[in-house]
Image 1 (cartoon, rainbow, N blue to C red):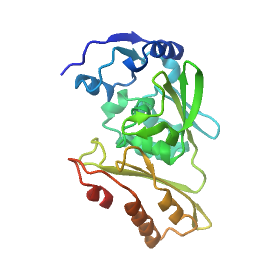
Image 2 (tube, rainbow, N blue to C red):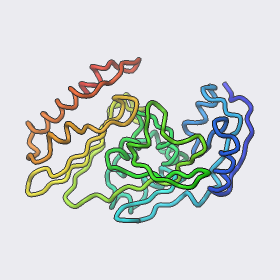
Image 3 (cartoon, one colour):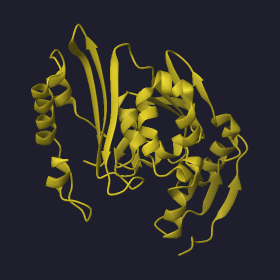
Length: 270
């Protein structure tokens, strides 16, 4: 199928994009990398009257060290994040997870802001953001505001952004000393959407777990922090029994849905 007719507008600055979005509101869509939007338009699951292209807004493409963390502009390509030595050194969980986003051709075009704002509950980047308590900056006609990543997500493919707001930046805190990290997902093939996934960051102190962060993907309408399991880990040594206890806590507390790809019980077992 082909998309319905729409008005195409190419913004040159963030201010221009905000102004164009304010004129159209709910009748507009923002085009970043287009890796999710274009298939949706082709299948006519969305039929905007106006498409606002952000690809010439160069001020939103950057990776910078800031405030003991890393700030990434929304139009930064996922491949640039994947290849960044700064990201690998300061935010290793993000560096670990991003190669799992689609295939490298997808990451060459896809943007970090587009993935976060698309709010796919099976995607990698929203789960990493929630795991690390990343902050996002959004801009609208009334100025800018900052949200935590958990405040950003409402439900399936739905954020708390107003129809006139643009996500402009995400900031990830640097990994503390003595912190291990891991991204793990289960998919039928590499590059497919994950059936389930988990982002983990664990900080040790004196041989025990001082802090644990766990975020799950594919088990609900938004990225899910496994806070009960986190609390079960803190203050204990990371033995097999302790880790299994945390895993069982996750299985008992999540409420995944069944679909054509797998049952709820299958996702819970994974």
